[in-house]
Length: 235
Image (cartoon, rainbow, N blue to C red; front, side):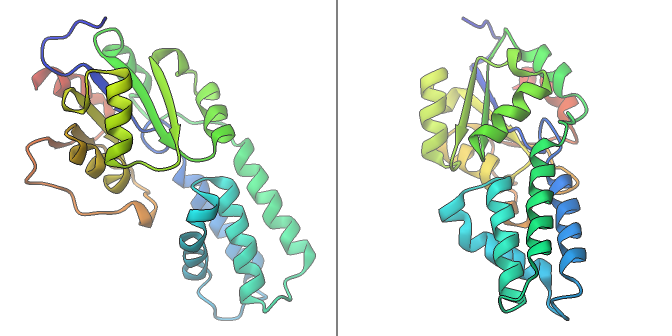
């Protein structure tokens, strides 16, 4: 059982763009996609069309690289009126496979912060996305042994955090969620009664943007993960 100087007993961490790079590779692949379609789609705003496809497909494909790849293919078919060359479809599939094989790059202070808090608090990885890909990234990150539990979920809601922090901790009221997404990591965690610590990333998917809950007494923001141990112990 962890020992701790205050009422906080469990800390949840987002994975993508909180502990390791993720959105950077999506942006690089999207640029590759635009290059592939540039000669076939005229003046079409390919990024906007791709985003619309992603929005439509979230309910069917969920979050992750595989859904993103399918959305790129769907967009390519739409903007070319079904005339996209097979070679372009093949290149899109190759780009998706490259993303699934990309080495994991942990973000500054990730390991040292987890090591500083592990043992005193129950440390939980809470991430959404493709199960196989998230498991791969966790294994390659070298951070797996620092977590008391790992939850790969289809969506992050107040109910999700209530369930997880009750199962692995002492309830949402004695827990904290740390992440780079206001919409997925911070707002629903605070709604559940937890602390929410926002650690912005330079690149964040537009669908994860939201207004910060500045007036909420359980909201905090940090420049990077390095300041988290001091913040935790000051509460």
